[in-house]
Image 1: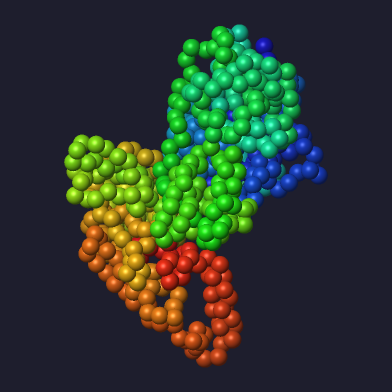
Image 2: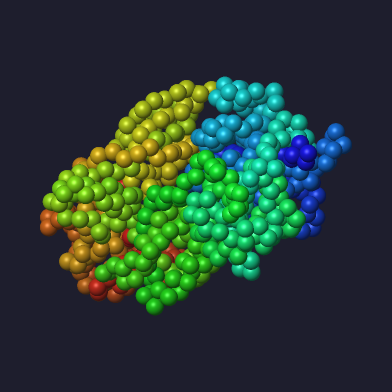
Length: 598
Ligand code: GTP
């Protein structure tokens, strides 16, 4: 029975605690790839990921390993995305594992996503090996972290493995630990096929490559398979395992992890969490826990130059091939022309998509203010979901609106408690609970409207806690709210793409602040520009940008040439991202600035 010699596990950690570095080391140590080929971070294949140091697209790797007992093992390391936006994907990857390595940074200690990831792993009954990483740092405090592992995580710190992924210390212990401490998979190779999809990616030559774990049964080339969520059926062309490159195999059996190719055109035809079985003699029940991807943040994307719409269309299609969680549909705006209304898993997802479109496809884009999905109930009793402020119905027809709430866990040193409390209350939050952790830190639990965190909440939290605050959230459901639509008029013309839905109590102050922001963001024109905020027909705030003086650099006092040059550079750069709305040039930054709270 080959299953005894398989170990399936993920590495989970708070961002930056060293997950990618450790994965790379494990791969290097098992020798499936030569040092010369070894790139800095092979698991993080996309540029953006590398630059931002975050893992978005998971990749899995099968590592052959000869343990101290002299036996050959296969260690399947299933990489998980490292951000709160991708919790569902993480949960599917964990459902494919028996164990997890939980990394804690030796100088930072336990943080919000350490806890969140641990809870996820425990939900899947995984065996957990704590890893204390970065022990090479002078600021490493191993005993302190061990204390946290015991008290905050409830794990046995005796079993913790000490590593420096950077310097290659403790790597062999991790491999040996995985063999000794993690259970082998269970499953029945003779039962009907049941395999769990935890990821997929697009290959221009082969189509969609589906990543899966076989729970029961066997799968091989030539099999007729189907996806249980939508009954789509395919003929398998190839199965195999990942060893950085794809290595075809004759068959994959219960307990194994690998890929299949079956002429599937786009990744949106495969769903993370779906179950694969045979068309004939399939398994009766799918793997539990399947969910459709649920976007929570919506925004419209427009090209700065209307001529670029075709290019944007092509780019969106290509991008979606590799990102099944990106959903979009055609959209149009009176002010901005044709574009796309898009749904994202979270703000980070939105930023990544924007960056990829701009960088990989050379497009210059305008994104409208991110919005959440509101539930609107009409006087007629009908209910509609609205995520686009431009489509918000006439308020007199509405009997009730609700908005999504999250449960947020914020971990901070105690001294920031007051500041965090104030931030959350300012954002219409409700303090639910708090708990003291070790070493003067606390875990504060709030319920907050999602709309209040989608923009700059995390940045704010970081700044008021001097970088010490960490944040994690989950959506808990809808609560009744009182919304108004705030419109903006530029020289009397309503700019639909600037409209936003705001809680009634803060609409007036939001309107005022946003007008001030727009005044800062919109450059002077040849004529006077009036900026107004309005609720319905009522103007609630007004600012005026006076007409442009010939020499823009004249307002720089003194003759500081470098300062003048900077200003000119800034204007030139800004130019590329200007959108003509009526007669006024509005920079890209203005569309997001209206959301800022101060
Ligand atoms: P995400 O992909 O964002 O989740 O981050 P990650 O957890 O994968 O962290 P990553 O491996 O990218 O490491 C984050 C930073 O910590 C990088 O600058 C690494 O070089 C550094 N790092 C990782 N391991 C060690 C270590 O053992 N010692 C030291 N000194 N630095 C380390």
